[in-house]
Image 1: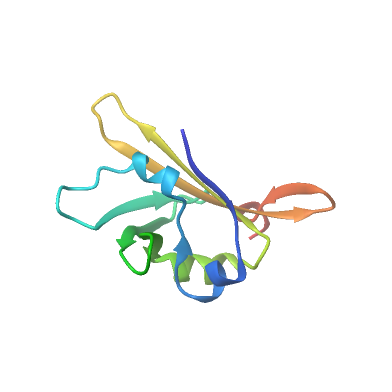
Image 2: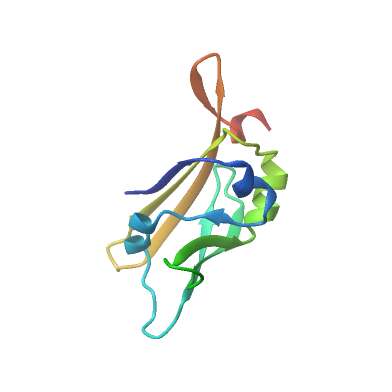
Length: 118
């Protein structure tokens, strides 16, 4: 299941956090009374990334952020504004959720995996 498919803004790559789409929150089991959930996502090279979805009640509407090792992911992959990040989730038969993250870059009108270029 695709959890998130987002073209990155300058803020997403420069501010150590990605603005997370609210519609994607249903892919996580947020404990009652908590405002964040941590998870591990594997990239295409099987590297683990410890990430966190956090709800911040600032201003008029709650803001959702993807944090944790997001900044490290951005730097290792060399992400920039206009690149795309796709987060997927697969639920195992035992109920365990497995997450995958991949980054893509537009080149001559086609999206290419950044992991393949490293």
